[in-house]
Image 1 (spheres, rainbow, N blue to C red):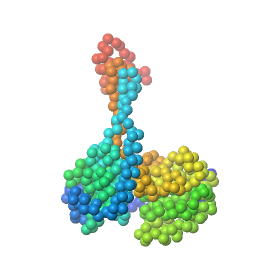
Image 2: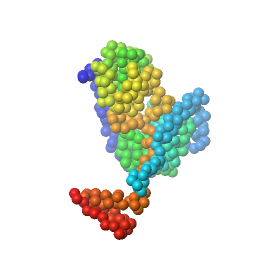
Image 3: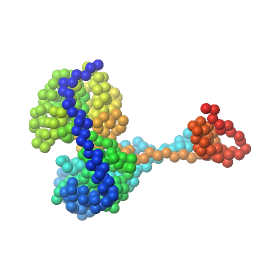
Image 4: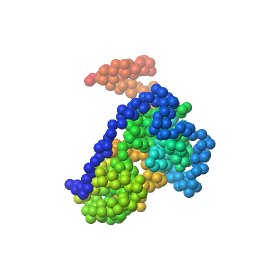
Length: 435
């Protein structure tokens, strides 16, 4: 099978990999050493903001009052959908116990982390949906403390709609601080905050690099790159809707790849002909991103059949995957590598980005090969436990002693030996390895 590229990307997400590592390392080290005062210095430098870092109840109330009622209704609608879906996800994880062998019981417990740090971008766009997606899932998971963090605008502070979204979603504290300094403040427990156990939410390359460096010291949702989207379409797809969906995702950023994979050349050519005019029709701030993304990162691929289309999609492992084709159940069963799947023309990535209920914090740059997106499960530790009767421990102790000696771990073997000697003093055991 051969893939034919009607349009081939000239750049990839790694083409713009400017080295921000050293800068981020220095900022993190400075803030860890200097604490609150140093974080405030960086906030003044990068955020150009000198207001309260942690919003007071009065400031939250004032910001919420600035949000129009219609927008409040929309934010509440999106929050309710995300909350319901998160509650369903949580219900899939249960505390269980099982008698592995007679007298030996093992179990599983799902324990939420104590403190979550949720980052919501607030630069070029006010990412209201990110506040909903991150804070709501942490709240449903059962985190004891949730900090919502978003970059303030000079002389204004955090966008009121982000404040409102974080507040109704359950944030315990809302912090007006952006970039590396905001991530550092949550990680190091500055300004009286508890140290975050996990950092979640999208951000620019500096935020992503800070999370990558801090991973291990804290948990993170994932290491994110530029957002990407792929559409699978056959001859039943509407070319205008396909083109519109591609452009809608290209506006995320100049380096946001969008891909069309189809088995219908006529559809591919029609979509390619429509995209430039759709980009030109966008507002200027969106147009420049979409134009660059389409020019440098987009691809259009023609395949022989739907199996080759599915294989191509799995190879790309897109963050967002849309299917506009016949026999949606076949695609749902066949496709295996994606962050979130949108089946049929009646849904779109934009729904998932904003209000449908599934999370929009998703794996990028092929990471969907090995992980899914943000969910209540990311905030929960799945831990195990065991207990045994003395009789139940006997066969386990014997096997443990012999395996340990085979491995050369005599101390482990003796931990089993002493129990057998105590519990069964009148019995003899062959505890040597035959290996």
